[in-house]
Amino acid sequence: MTSASDVLDDPELRARKKRSRRATFIKWLRKVHGWMGLWGAALGLLFGTSGFLLNHRAGPLRIPSGEPEVSTLQVPLPQPAPETPRDLAKWLKQQLQLTAAPGRMQKEPAHRVAWGDRSAIQPEHWQITFAAPRESTQAEYWVGNGYVTIKRSDNSFLATLNNLHKGVGMSVGWVLLVDTLAGGIVLLSLTGVLLWTEMNRRKTIGAVLVIGSIVAAVYAGLM
Image 1: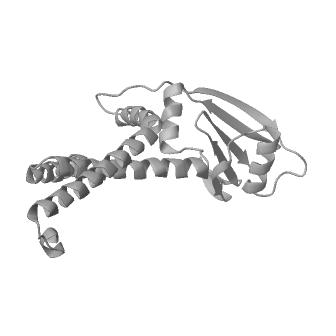
Image 2: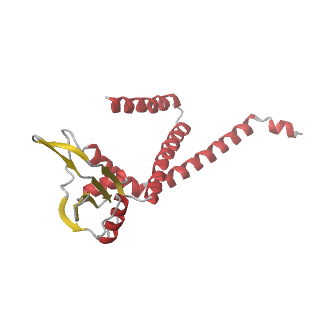
Image 3: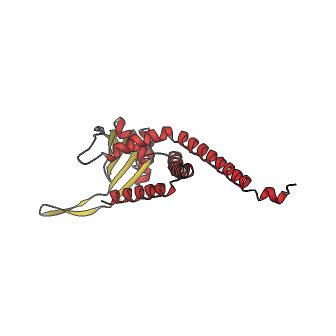
């Protein structure tokens, strides 16, 4: 008669349970790997294309992304004029119905400059940038003038893709969405390595390939 302890100590039964746990783990890895791949497919296509273009934005293999269309106009200021760059940015956003939020603001104080054999006081200078993926608008104002100069650049389709990749003028929601893609790529890499090691007995070769790829990428980036 077979006792319970004999059943628990049966090598064949232990091996069968081990194979069952391994099969369950591999099945779970495949599901996670597959869902992460499905989630990142659309954004991965976008970021893969724009990343390729950014990688070739300069150098001997440069791929031109198209020249932006630039237009300039001068906008009369209200009276009294805005007192700070932030006030001017708020007024311009309402007046010109700009969709992008004001980004970089520069304020250069008034200072004395040499002009030939004499000197003069250069008035305070403001610069405000409204950046969006499809377009960018820059406002330039010399304090005391009755107008502000507006320069607008409309980007090409390829330049817009690059701005989406870099997050230029994008909201917090877009930034967080891209963070999920970055996390998904990391998880895809980890689950991919685990699947390879679990389904292939040559684990040492896999470890050497992964570590070698990381070292080669770091070395190429530092060169």
